[in-house]
Amino acid sequence: MRVSTKGRYGLRIILELARHYDKNLLTVKQIAEKQEISEKYIEQIISLFNKAGMVRSQRGASGGYRLVDAPADITVGDVLRVTEGKLQIVECTVEDSRFCKRWGECVTVDVWREVRRAVLDVVDNITIADLVERSDQKCDFNALLI
Image 1: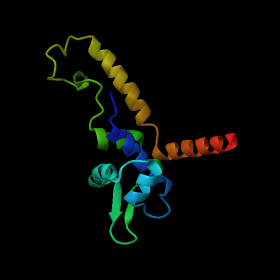
Image 2 (image 1 turned 30 degrees about the horizontal axis):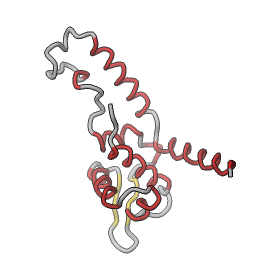
Image 3 (image 1 turned 30 degrees about the vertical axis):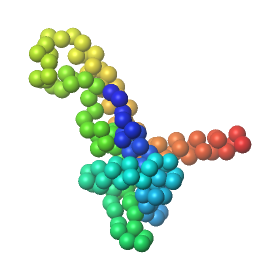
């Protein structure tokens, strides 16, 4: 499975919104400046999150975006499913796959299922709150090096 820039940037956008969860709304411009992502691309990605009900927008002079759910209730997998769709390693890992005529007898499908389970175990067990904490620790560590 390869995660596109949409998935990688989407995770960074959600992470930035999580950092301000209990604070103010963030504008696309603020997210763009902090994450070094173009405003146009952020608008495309954030509209996916808006449609999925993951973020809420508010119009007006003091408008912007905020997460609907707490960062501890959102996983990396949730974000990737919005931006990337199904998290399939290969098509034949879908039960009763019509993609491959050899599905019922193919032994390699078991390998792909194990890989998929391992990936899902990681992305579905790391929350956005975990990433905020990791980010804070990295910032603290980097500050010590200066």
